[in-house]
Structure formats: structure tokens, C-alpha cells
Length: 247
Image 1 (spheres, rainbow, N blue to C red):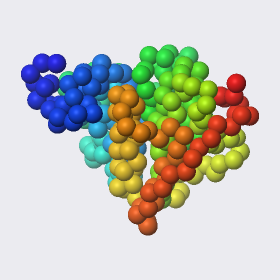
Image 2: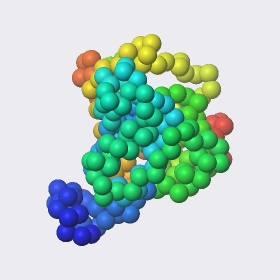
Image 3: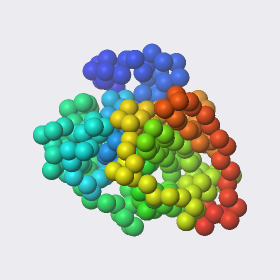
Image 4: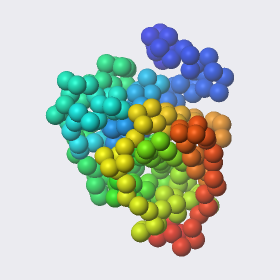
């Protein structure tokens, strides 16, 4: 690290769990982030500020007025722009030290698998089960850790799927086909700070996983209820009949 980096990341370096060695590891890490909306905004901003060396971002949507209540990557002047383009401008201003790879389209099939194989970790900040299922399957196949988050109304959840051992569950162990209700913020609403809480927890879990520090959410689902200000975890178990990760 050069002198400017030592100063920029000094508050990380002061942490004994991170130190200069850990910060250097973050600077050498590559993370794939899918989704640049409510969850993706705090994830992208905190990972960029924290010094993730190479951040790959993907979103095929454009900025709308209704997004601005919670999607802090974008401003009023960005309405009508591609979210990926708007996000890239914000992130480069926040920390020009990092490398950005930007996709203004949905990553699918071979392209998705290629990016996941290149990544040290993947973060799912999408808002639909089709994308979540595809991400999960590709991460299981590649053995790449996946940090998953979701938020709606005043409730959210976060978990980690390491995908590097035969005992850990995957996303499809949690949600099988036909067992979940597809809900959207446009129909049900969402409290603005909720996505900040969930996205920040995703970013923290990503950093801990990359550095192999602390206790992660592997095998646990963290449930957040901001209406009653309650946080609790439930155990996740591998589904022996899971169509994605069963032996």
C-alpha cells in the first residue's frame, strides 16, 4: 500500500482483526454485486469505501423517481439513466482507488458463470427469485461464497452461503420452487432505512468472509424487524433433496 492508502484505510488498519495485512487482502479482492437498488446502494458504497480492490456491478434497470426514497447511489439528476452508469459515477467519486467493471445488462448463463468464477465473493442485492435462483445455482457450481439479502415493508433478512463444503445449505434449501410468495416493494412498500440496515449487514458479512474473521451467518438466517426493533437468527439446514446442492 502507498501512503495515501495507508491514510485512507487507517481506521481499518487500526483494528487488530484486520490490520495492514487484512486491508491488503481486501485491496486484492474481487467482488461481484448483482443489483444496484435499495440493497445494492449501501453494499456498493461501503465496499467501495472499505477498499475492495475490484468491484464488478451489474444492473439492467434505469433510475426512476420512486427509487430515490431509498436508493442512495442515485440522485434526481440521474432519473432516466442506467442504474449501473449512475452507480459507477457515484462510486468513482467516493473512492477512485478501486477498479470497477460495469455491466448495464442482466448477467445470464455463460456470462454470469464466468463472472462468478472470477469473483472471490458474490452479493445478491436483487429483487426477484429468478435472479436469486440463477445466482445461487452458479455460485454452488463455482464454489463461490454468496451473501444474500432481502427487504420489504419493515422486515428483512441476511445470510451467507459459503458453497465450499458439503454440509452447508444453499439458497434453494431455504426457498424451494413454489414455496415462496413473490412480493415487490412497488406493491407492498418498504421503509427507507431498512434497506440501509440490510445492505450494511451484507457488506459487513462480505468483508468478514473475505478476511475469514469473526462468526459468519453460515447456517443461520438473520431476521430483522424494524417495526418492533427486533433482531433474531434461525438455523438453516441443508436439504438432502435440494435440486441444486444435494450430493
